[in-house]
Image (cartoon, rainbow, N blue to C red; front, side, top):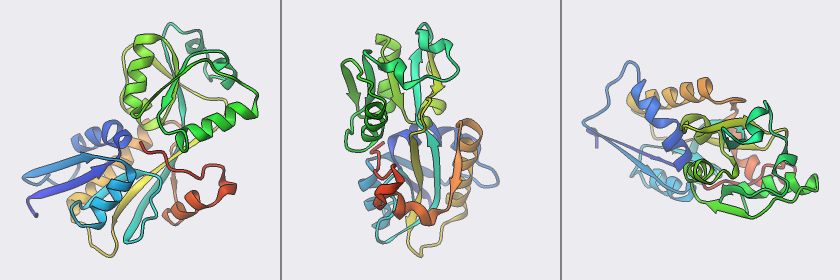
Length: 235
């Protein structure tokens, strides 16, 4: 497998960060073949733990037995609206702006949507009908074509700009977490390490509110209900 770099990732990272990072790799050459597979977090973990992939980029959960969490990051979820939407004129979109409106969001109500729903409920805000899709890029396309407002992850929002769609911060912080995993105690090749560094550099440069966290916190994010951000996202 020395001639192949096997990477697995969830869709938001694979779409929003990795293509730019591949273009900016420094000091190393990609091997003869690079394989990039996009999966749910549970499959990313399986592929890395089994040795079929060298590194995995994933949203929560990350603390899987047999894996080392090498990097951990967070950034706030954002609003996506069409450029002719009244909300596009605002620097920060208030959650109250979603009251009574059709909204697009991510098809994972127990995870991503849970946090958004809690924030809306805490403020007594009822949206109109909801369109859910399992990729944030799909949600952006729905915004562009239908004019609904969306709440999506920041990786896709800032990494895959769509003409006619603007991204704005929300007036409440709902954090999206992601990170990098490798099989426990398995050394990484320089090309894999270089890709991790390149992906981080792209995220730090392009994502508003980006934070690098202690990887040791990964388990606590999933298991600690007091954190208020205790679920994975599936994207």
